[in-house]
Length: 276
Image (cartoon, rainbow, N blue to C red; front, side, top):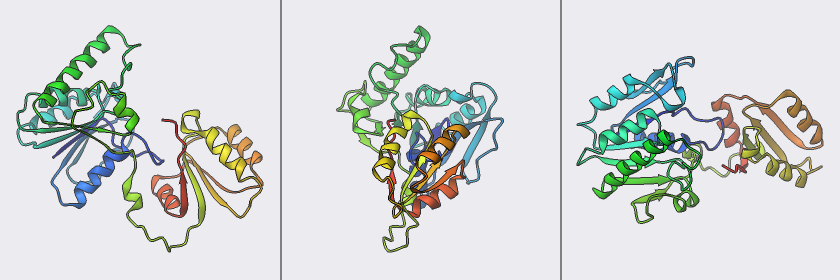
């Protein structure tokens, strides 16, 4: 089994386009399945690869699209022996070329996580060249589907309903959730927090919804809240802390992933208000 993704580094929070993909890899590993991961990372960051059979290739330009000739060559070398290929996202360099390569295979199953890449109207503001590559890629995906080798994994029912592919395609819904965080379901263990929020301080992450919750809880010191921001300006942070100083809130900024996961396990409820 071959996994291909431009990025697989987990986010600090609960969601993110790589979280469910990484969670799936963890489940495959626990079940003893033999797999390999091909992915990329910018040259200025530390190599995140620490696991056997996971290969991380540096990108020196066009980091966002995962431009790495070495990564592509590595995928080509595994073409003949791959029974199932999992592709995380569309239109990036290695993902596009992986779809192109395995469109010629007659036996390999292709499982795609489109990450909103198949939604109607996505290309309306794109230039002619980008539209051409998108439509060409869409044609490749439809050809794979016609040979009964395609599975499309959507994050939500909404994403599925907006897909440019017919709903009759072989598909399923797998939310962007790191299921590893919920393996231990011992409800009797003590919980330090009643509620936790993890995410960026930005409108698309539902900060307005977070503030609505805090206003509802206003002046109730019995409820223990943990708020973990990936990043926030000193001014915004000072304003928030001042506005809700009457509440029992534990504020954190830029905490390491492992520590965030510990905090999440120590909370009774996770508040996930993100719009996207």
